[in-house]
Amino acid sequence: MARSTKEEALETRGRILDAAAEVFHQRGVSRTTLADVATAADVTRGAIYWHFKNKGDLFDAMCERVRLPLEAMFEKTADENAQDPLTQFRNKCLFALQEAISNPESRKIFEIVMHKCELVDPEDPIMIRQHECFLQGRTDIERLLRFAVAKGQLPRDLDPILAAVMAQGLLFGILSNWTFSPHSFDLAENASKVIDNCIHMFKTSPFVLKNNGN
Image (cartoon, rainbow, N blue to C red; front, side, top):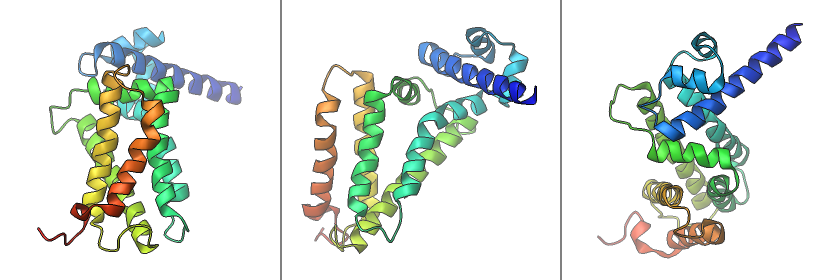
């Protein structure tokens, strides 16, 4: 009986998250209430509060469905003793793009975060959490690039902070543009070219170095 109850609770939680993604995608985050989510999930508001403290907690749990695979991939590859950190960086970036291309649920969450989440209140828990994840993502990229420099795969005077800012901006910009207008360019065809061009720039451009004469 306990096993059945636990499975039912997990099934209800999953149904709520599925409904939240659908309603947030249709209405936008700020215009969606927990009552809207409850109706879409065919549960009571009490059931939602059983699993989630508030809308911010629900939104964060929904985002974790995309965030956790990315973080898990980083944890498996971000090893300072790894022999090929630059390939790890490339694979991590490609994984993010391919998630949007091939996983409809991930794509929906990317679209919500980038286009249907009105972040205007600096005290909003959703905004605070998104800001934390943004900074953590940049730190993760910077760490991999530092490993690549240490292994001699990138110039020893590469500015890893600037390079991480540029790499994150490229990824975010590509995902934002493509999810806004997926028919405007073929991301599947060009994803690897985008990342390889970024790596080539880090290897050859004098403007990503700490001392470039400026």
